[in-house]
Image (cartoon, rainbow, N blue to C red; front, top):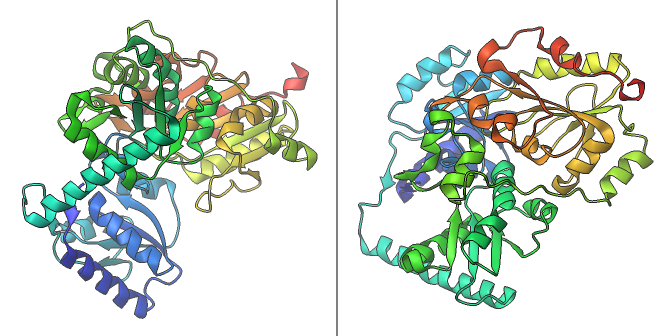
Length: 450
């Protein structure tokens, strides 16, 4: 990502303050239209002033992929994809030279300039890598040195020697973390790495590691990981630090080959990232026999064994399904005698109307869903997490172009070889229609009657 110049940030802050004082943002959810870098500045500015940043709108499908999104902390949608599945009271903030074109495009969705679309900067100033001023040089040098210090602390804390490895999970996603955990032992064995440390970006991802029996794990935020990466680049190929991600830079981006001659998500990790033999199988994780959250649900009468369907409606790499689909599907399942729940993570995700909200810790999701008996999911990393669980699963693939193919071609669980029992519905082929809730609900009968 480019480095935003200070004067550009000040201009955005000044204009957001102006909108704030005029009460034009009150009660609104904030969207940005344009680049990742600008959206991140806007996100920080509005958050500081007590507003909620919802998402970035961006028309370039090639940028809405895991490898490109590894530096950001917000979902990204095309305008058409977002407004087809979302409803709310939104304001769009823009800082781009293409402001006029963006306003015209947003007009198709009922937005108008100076009502719910505002320009917060006239230009997009960046200080690119071609700027070799002393300030940039010494800033990068400082990051390299800090990366070295972080590495030494990790080595001391975990008892690592110079020949041991530190693996950095470069992208904060459930599916990527699952794939890394599933292949990393085979990679270490193939390369004679006897001792290693896995660095992940979120505390909850430690639970995914535990499912695979990986306990030598460190949680670090992205700025620290960046510093380790800077130091790793200085060390070169002999470095004891390895970044595990679909790209190390824009010129070495293996995700560009998604769907090319059938290449899918498993292939990207097995063949390209880890360079393992084609017949290497992903390790099967384990379900913890102890689950406090499941005991909580049982104790409070919020779950019925083999007669509960858990909905997972939220996805961030692939577009979401319309809210009405989930609502109608939940009604039909409830009419058939099911207890219906929605798993929500954080304040931004809301339970489907008429369902019981669950907030299942990541590591407990397999155990809870296995007990419940069924799950309906929009394709996301949760599907990878449940791929080995013995229960009724329906996964829906929204219409979404992905590199050389579609969301289904890139992420089909069956094609990836990790779940042969799942029911998959490919909307890239059939398109969305109002009969989908009937089709999905029809996949379920009360298990106790089987």
